[in-house]
Image (cartoon, rainbow, N blue to C red):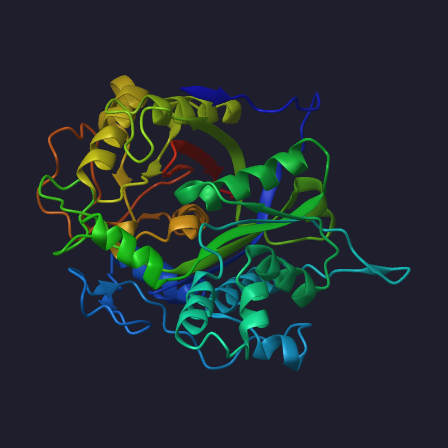
Length: 420
């Protein structure tokens, strides 16, 4: 196991707050629709229509219903016409966060303001790559639209779309740390501000349903043929989904200077690497334990002060068992007082977008003072010494912790505090 320590910080790193949050999932478009869905523990799985899933064991996923129109930004008609599905998800989330924040990019001497953008994703524009491959195989002499697919397929083109849409000068950073990508992107954005490299950063994560990824999980028999039930004794696999979330992060001084509405504060972030296996976590959750412990140390909080833990909780036997062991050890004597749930029971696993979306869910819980339940949970796994939230309920939530773990052993933990 390797632990990446936090970079050197100034004597008094600035506090980092969230002033805008945009979210798109299969529960709906925007904060309000999603907050209602997560608060009630709704599920959003439906038959896949984006590609032919008829030959697969599983034929359902948390597929987003995209609106026919796109938000008004600085993108020109030609750019809008070329938006792929991944870019559309990302643009919707980014536009909501941008408008909510009240940010306005400035133009100095003909150059766009240098606001960094940090994005996390695993597959980027994968469906475009699939279309490119099909046409290349089926009609190799036909090249129409192939150059556009080849360019838009790459994740940096979707990041560039965000820069263009809001008149930003960058720099642009892309994080592809498997299913921890979104959380790592937010963490890196937080660190940029903490070490004085930027006063504000636009960050988040996204991923779109693709036949390649869906088929891969189905071939591995990792998808649940029944229902995604994280931490249930009878869990039998994960469910996949798609979506995006974007956050506007800035120093507390910046937010106060312009009288911004503050949604919450990010107070801790840590990453660790588990070298146990390419796809399987260490059975005792060693790296997950280290990530939670280090994030708490950086945030200056103890497990007793965590009012809600949003678990990675994929619904697979090995992942949930290892994470449960890690939570038990991390919380220690306070384990019985830390409520835990996995919102993947509602919207599936969003891969590179999961950590970013779940960070917004934590902000919703902090703002609304409620806990998102897993209504599909019937028989909690005995390994879970912590209380699992299975029914909608109000609660005092001042500090929330969110876990994101990915293939290759990457682990990330974010800690957020309520802004009263």
